[in-house]
Length: 224
Image 1 (tube, rainbow, N blue to C red):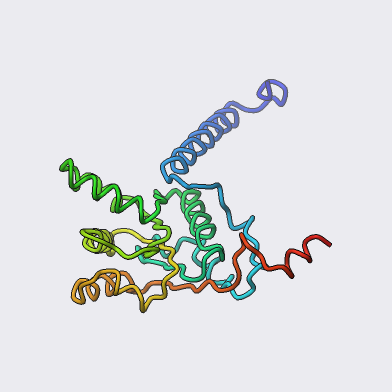
Image 2: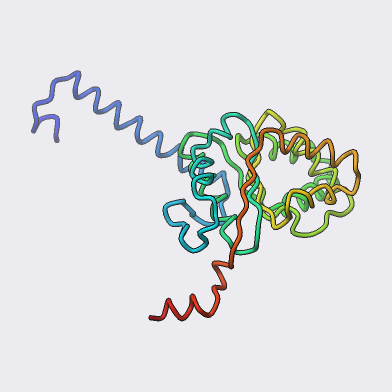
């Protein structure tokens, strides 16, 4: 045992035991946060290929990865073409937030609306909406992939309203900001929602070809 081998003093021995226990607890808490975050994949910024699409604003992504916007309870939108890495970056930022001790939930917008529709049916709406308003960071993936129907515009407004200045939202979408008001199908609701969502928000544009379906020239280069 290192205590006897190195003849450590009792205070040093106690310090190391306490330090080891703290590290063990912190590691366990991190694993708990990562599990609760419900990421679809284990994504980090270190394994993201920024060189693939040089137009992606790397410095802005790195700035978001500090999670200062989460601590300030502001929002961030990652907008742009399909396959350009929005979901990867969103999960990577969520992972960084977990490392910093913040509570995160990653979920697709479709799953949110499906769960809230079911919650209305079994009278658990308040409990389910609380799940989406409680975390420090809510990562909404593929928001606006399809038109919202029935009560979904109201559900989206309610999430934005409840989280305003209470927690951060990080959303990915193929739609540009000026298309978002049409999701609500009500001018007054759209104005109220967008005013809150965009207040001091970071809006990043992802442009370029799909990482999943590179063009023939890139494929040919990769075979060389």
